Image (tube, rainbow, N blue to C red; front, side, top):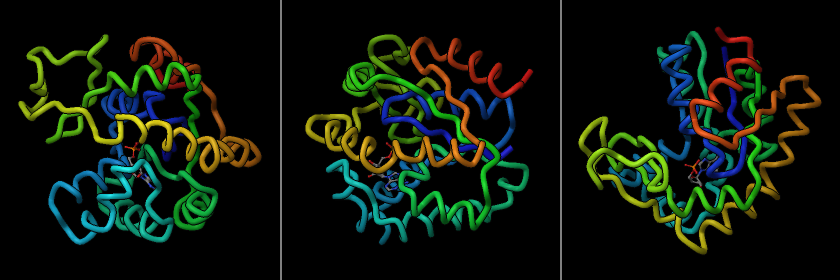
Length: 210
Ligand code: AMP
């Protein structure tokens, strides 16, 4: 199954993708994680995108499409994938359709107020990318990742004013993809509000996964 996870930042795409990976045994590919890893390494890609990420802006389409093209060419993608955070623009969606069309686009519907609340309390492991929330998904030891022992921190772009920029970008550039995938008959919309286990049940029911 080739799946796209759509929805605003903070909709729970990454959390759900991690749960769905255990179920479906296909890789979770997050363009945000790929860019953050490049920034951490200080690679040429990382140097190019560092300031864009910190400001909450979007990396240019051509560069983003190239990163995804390379990643989808790896051997673990043969049985399918979950793309989280890509496509984010119509040109990115068109490029993916031409490269390897997705079977489904799963749209996690969450209101802006909920998203703002979630982003401001979200924490992430700097080493493995596991997502936490200081309100209801805390690591067992404060500041330490349960999965890998890495440092759990607040992403630069989960602070104001980047949150606002990211939501504006989402509403202007990414939300139109909901109708775009709808017109292709690939759209599945799920209520993204609630605990991850509940959203996972909705996801499984909507996609007929046992
Ligand atoms: P995310 O982890 O999905 O919230 O992505 C973090 C940041 O990475 C975004 O705010 C953008 O700066 C960049 N980014 C991730 N995916 C894309 C994409 N598909 N197109 C452009 N920029 C992206």
